[in-house]
Image 1 (cartoon, rainbow over the protein chains, first blue to last red):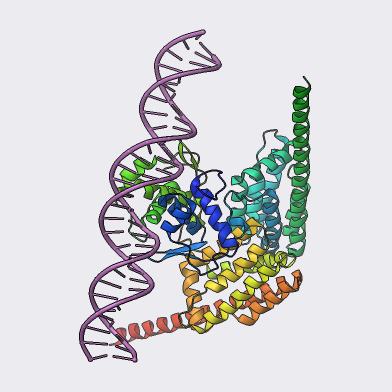
Image 2 (image 1 turned 180 degrees about the horizontal axis):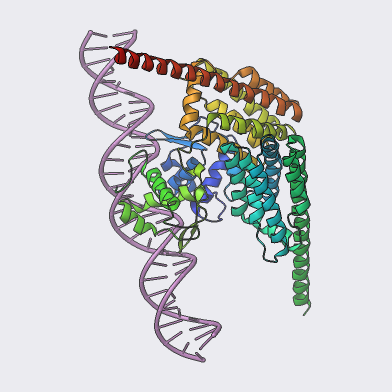
Length: 250
Length: 250
DNA sequence: GGGTGCTGATGGTATTACCAATCTTCCAGA
DNA sequence: TCTGGAAGATTGGTAATACCATCAGCACCC
């Protein structure tokens, strides 16, 4: 296949190339991509492979396929459309900082006694999970979702849930959170308690601020884990160099 | 093709059917989907069509394809993967008010010239769509997603996209927005321009405020449409009562 | 018990054929 | 001259078939 960086599967390589061409302005929004047969000839791949690449673009809502007419560019790709692009732990935590703080503020305006009791029980469970060497973060997740539920807005709840699902399914985020945990960066009970206190006081400003403090600390923990990871990588690279040198001088 | 509701293109029908099967628990997370050849036989389609459907699922990160092994379920489809999930128009717009304003504030801190140009073109397109009696809200959607993209945070983008997808798939929201549109409540270009101006000025506070003004107005429009609808319902109820009374006294 | 090799099953890609839908061009009629 | 319809070309959609690469499981040997 011509002009494609071999990487994984052909359809992905071709989708990537087409995304690059759209991004570079070769095919503006509203314009039609070349026909399947033409693309197949140009990239020296089979037509089914072209179709598969176009479908990948279609599912990402980048193009619209009109039967008998062609594939039309719907929008310019952003970074999030590059295959293999995963949500980073930083992005995830930044998004949570922005959004969960607003959810906490809204919840504070209307939270009930029962909801407060549930959240209090979850704070206690977080403390218990922190003692367990193989602890999970189930209670932490439930704590945040309980606050989202207290907004009594289903859309808000589904958004916060989506953020937590992203966290669960992102390999990079999982790795970094694991590193953070090994470095003993765990949910800080005091921060959760501060959020709970602000909710109890019905103070939306305090709730927003407490949630931001908490998630900023999570962000710091991730940066700490990132540095730890960078150090470990550097050590590994040095070791490899030493071995190479030992081999060269043996 | 067997057991598929005919709708659009075969691969889409099949992808939909597979999503339903995953959702219903037939294929839990981590389990392997049947082989392409088996699915082709079962659904009475060709193997390339099966491949196309699997690629659609793969691009949506629902499955992971291992060469020589099969397609494995990565996660359960959420409600956002299933059309028809019902969030009220009020909940949706309130969530957007909370979250999109934060996204606008973040975007304002780093937005590029190219991104501003894209957004400006979209504002102009909104104005054009407003003239069309059968106008859509495509440009409005793209406007908001372009701002989300300008945050350069994939998690933020996916959240805003999810909110718009909820709107697109919610029957109740669609009805109310239709009512609002008939009452001539349309995207106000001046509000969009104000958001654009704040972004251009790199003023995150102004961007947040402008987005909140805009979405508060959308909320007002919905409430207006809700009142109109409530009035119409009340009139219908009164008419029904009159007919019942007339029947009772006849 | 562990390692290696073989076989069958899996996905990946290509070629070819035919059909349906759309677009463009040309011709005939008003 | 203009308009509408038909025909042909181009487009995407689906299917069938062939062959190749990779993986997983099983059997055999050390």
